Amino acid sequence: MIPVNCMAERPDLCDLTAADIAPLESLFDPLTPDTWRAFARSQYITLRTLFADQQPAADLAQLALQLTKGIAIDEGGSQPYIPVGAQMMQSARVRRIIDLCNAGKGYADVAREVGNITEARVRNIERAWRQEQRALRQGKLDLE
Image 1 (cartoon, rainbow, N blue to C red):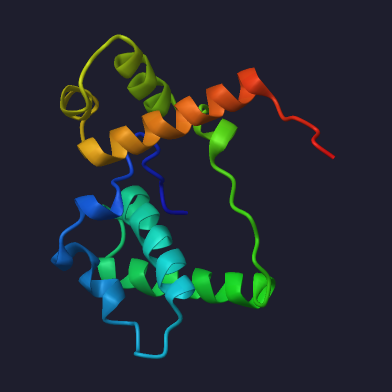
Image 2 (cartoon, one colour):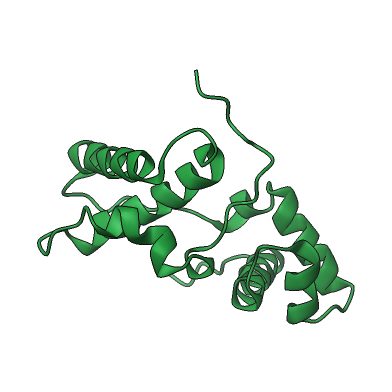
């Protein structure tokens, strides 16, 4: 069994260079659907984060594409909803980001302090958290 590095922080796609993502991109042909590309990239980033020390990038890229094909077989033809909201707060990293933002730190300072995250990603996380909190306070009106 391959040991998993659970302590590593998963980078955002925008944190990777073209060379980082090249092993996966080389596997796509012009007919690869955009959804497949998005799922494969996400899985590749996660696999690189967890197994980069144990497996070559080319192997991880192949695995990401095979996992994506599995999703296509299992879920193809449907549009599954992938929730983010409350699940986000289970992440210690996200909680740290929110705590720092609530303490009045700027986005650039938060990104620097948390590490391996872009200022734009910090902004997106904080915005999603604010929207979720607002929705929890306001509830939903039954207008029918």
